[in-house]
Image (cartoon, rainbow, N blue to C red; front, side, top):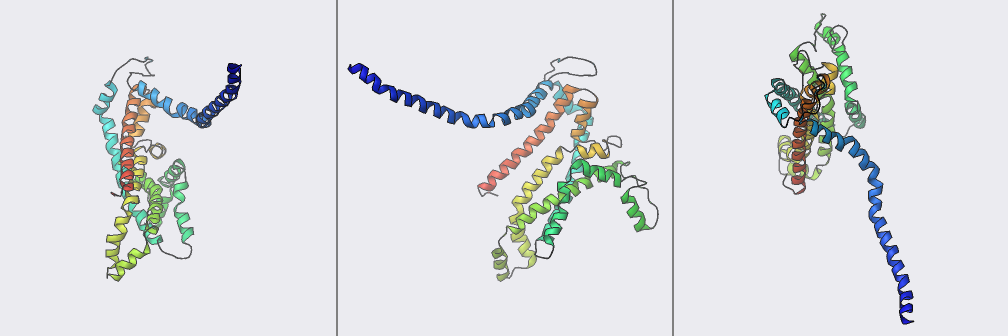
Amino acid sequence: MKSGAKALSLAPATRAGLVNGRRATSRRLAPWLLVAPTLLVMVATSVFPLAYSLVVSFTRYELARGTGWEFAGLVNYRDALRDERFLASAVQTAQIILPALGTAFVLGFGLALLLNRSFRGRGLFVSLLAVPIMVAPTAGAMSFALMLTPKYGAVNDLLSILVGQRLLIDWLGSPALAKLSVAVVQVWRWAPFYMLVLLAGLQAIPDELYEAGRIDGASSLQLFGFITLPLLRWPALVGLLIGFIDLVKIFDTVYIMTTGGPGASTETVTFYTYYTGVRFFHVGYGAALSFYVLATVLLLSIVLVWVSSRREEGAI
């Protein structure tokens, strides 16, 4: 009798324990069930293609020859370092993006300084100047390609009016002018971004610092050099890194405006990778080239994260 009563008294406690255990398990699984659809989409669209490309990069997979997955080890990566056209495309990428980023930053900084004061219609000016950020890169590139056509382009028409004679400059037909044209499009895209970033940084600087400097007899140039520039170092550095990370992958502007030409003068790293893997069907070699681009972007991203962490620690 005592054992039966003890069993009956333990039964509710056992059932309660099971219920609590199930609830705890449900609470642990609920977050994973909620994010499971997103994780599946990420795996299907990011993780699997990346893993697939990595495997392909170690093979001599060529669609034009109908070869299978012939394992080649690191041959594709070695050949990329000996590929003069790939190395030339890396140099041309730098020749386009470095002047473009520098010019965009200077223009954006100048606009931010001009807009960092109260006047009627400032919000409208900021909104209008920020329009290029909201325009799709392909749409912007197509617009510039039309404006730069020799006979009917708006740029030549405007220059013809200014100089008083008809000009037929082939902006996209000369290697130097084609690089300049692609760089100008990037300046048009990125100057508003730097304007917004630096304007936000300027407006975050306390007015008390400037007032204290004026009381100490500092000139406007000294206030700019000892207060404005040091406090803008962080947003400027982050903005430049973000721009560099994005422009290393420049493809759409080149594809629409010049298709890498004339010749191969505007052929960037990503454009050459596209041509190698998609147009020439050297899938394995093209995959290896894409991982060089990925490594560059990853390295720059690590630098960005490091700068961010140093900023949080107060070292920057």
